[in-house]
Amino acid sequence: MEQKVQSAKKRELMYWYLASRGVPKSLHCLCLKLAEEYAVNAIARSCLPPPEHVSRLADTSFNHIVLLTDNVLAASVVISSTVENAANPEKLVFHIVTDKKTYSPMHAWFATNRLKSAVVEVKGLHQYDWSQEVNVGVKQMLEIHHLICSHYYNNLKENDLEYGGEHQNFLEALSPSCLSLMNHLRIYIPELFPELNKIVFLDDDVVVQHDISSLWTLDLNGKIVGAVVDSWCGENCCPGRKYKDYLNFSHPVIPSHLDQDRCAWLSGMNIFDLEAWRRSNITTSYHKWLKLSLNSGFTLWQPGVLPPSLLAFQGHVHPIDPLWQVAGLGYRSSSAGGQILEAAAVLHFNGPAKPWLEIGSPEVRSLFGTMKTSSNSVRNQSRGKKVLASVSA
Image (cartoon, rainbow, N blue to C red; front, side, top):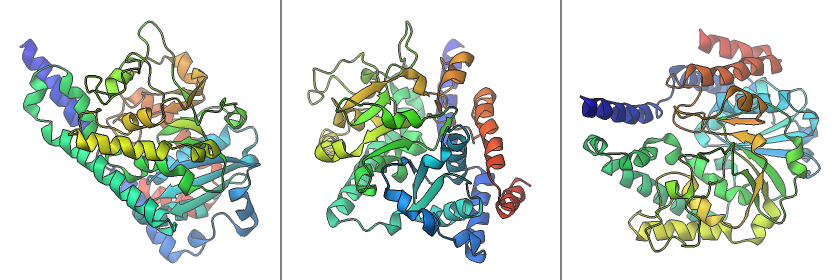
């Protein structure tokens, strides 16, 4: 009976990951409504940002924030929560990069629900004029990531879950982020924004609780990325996200000098020095590791976005205060208590249970729901409210 209980728990975990691949009907309908709005409403097609603010897009005296997302609701919550808690919101410039199918809904939402202070730019990938070299690199990157996820997905049988926890790490192959084009494009941020020198990157599954303006004045000591590393470490520091949880140290290709028990740095909220990045070979190194993974039969690391970045950015990460971010809120077990959640500047709902899905825990979803409600108060255009109201109905 104990074995049957354990087997049922493991199967439930797999179904939990599979459920994370779904798109709620309300979100799907919201995009359809906004796409219709873009087609029939001239205001929904108006310039973002307005002409008088275009110069801010490349002005390095402003604080630039980058989002790569195809989720309109999530982008709205990220931006609204950041603006609401900013000491000087007029200094903020948001750059949203999305795919072609989401461009019209995303543009319509932010055109009909303009922020009073901050500047928002919405740009589709189809609007970039990249070189042939970059286009080929992006295509190869996506193909290899798809092969990695397919490899683990095909090997993930229900029978495997009968035997221990080894195969539970493969469940990340079921996560939608594993195959997300927007998720993998962060390695090309310097090419996406050639005129910027320092940016804060935010995932679309975060909520900002406090002012983050001091991030732009942080001294990275010559490093390329500032990231939280030892987030709220206690006796059992960063369980499940040490280097050994991502990389296969039994493979001779993985550098032996890496500390297996070292905590991996957190994505979701990072400060990037793009000038230093352009002087480095990080993007080239990232592609080198992808090809090594392909040649090794996909045995170098567990499926996911972070493992190749850990290797490519090795030696280029500057640790920042753990107060900047609490992560893991999209998993069932989170070690973060109430006081920690309140103190953190950014809450990261990484994991399969995104707060807009019903599989998320009610306590965690309430944190996102509060910001979703307050984001509507930041908006001031009745047309956008009518769209959202009709979808909610």
